[in-house]
Image (cartoon, rainbow, N blue to C red; front, side, top):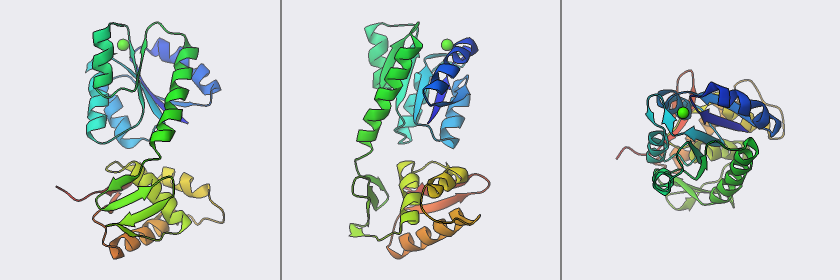
Length: 225
Ligand code: CA
């Protein structure tokens, strides 16, 4: 699972990296708000570990902006300050948990794992983009309230696009999603299933559409308000 750590102390990240790797996490590292914002828009993370004290400002602005975009990636905030006011402000900005420095790496790992379990539960709620709704529990897709029948690979693609709606999903990530399924895959599998999914959504009268972001991947976008 991929984690984004936003922290300007490279020593701290160097110390955490092997421990998180041993716990099964792959780490991407951002050192500023600017970096983190870009990486969150382009990448897909299971969770974000976010330092509040960053060189270009208050790290809480990263989670605030992410939530404003509809990004529900779980975020754990790190801070040297542990006052009640700080804690409340961090959670009010959209953070899911809070850890005061210095902390034991084992505690960070335990909290990240707890957040991931919680976000799995949250992910069971139906997700909507435009008039398209996916119920992750039943894997039922509805367009304008009517059932839309999709094959497994079309559904696998829609699942990831709608969970990350209004954000670009890298083509490699969609490929990874397809490779988990049975059977042979051609080199243009993603294009093929995107094409079929687009056609089915259009036929069903979907107000959401799959946008191609050249050289990067695809995005499910709702109607422009
Ligand atoms: Ca810092």
